[in-house]
Amino acid sequence: MRAALLIVLGLVIGVIGTVVGLNAQRQQQPMSHAVMAVMAHHAGALSQSMKNRQCDAAQTQQHLTRLLQTSADIKDAFPGGVDQPFLDEIAKLQATTEAALKAAPADCAALASAFKPIGETCQSCHQQYR
Ligand code: HEC
Image (cartoon, rainbow, N blue to C red; front, side, top):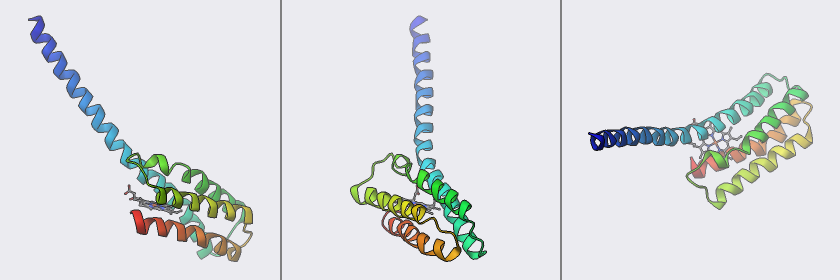
């Protein structure tokens, strides 16, 4: 009786363990989507402001800051491992975003030229890895 109970208990624990493991695996991939979605939100807000020709300096700084902060999570969002060229693309995204922040674009023309290398980095990483 006791042995049968232990076997059932073992099965239950095994099933729970499998579910927890599967959930962990499932949660890892959404992290990459989530990080990219947040970056796309801020990059999108910046392009929209350029389209509307309303490039508020303070808002620009805020979106660039959030873009930079979110880019710090790219590496952790790909737990399957990343190679050196991928890390280089992340570093490039951070360097171009930092440069844009430093340039402190005060109008749409300035934002357009500061944003261009950022957009090019999104694109070049996607061409290789997406
Ligand atoms: C270091 C490489 C790299 C950089 C830089 C990068 N991305 Fe991505 N991005 C990826 C990869 C890889 C995927 C595919 C992720 C996946 O399917 O899990 C992706 C997917 C996306 C997606 C689709 C998300 C989804 O749910 O499928 C969007 C939107 C996106 N990126 C936006 C951006 C924007 C905007 C930038 C620049 C500000 C950027 N990315 C910079 C690697 C990068």
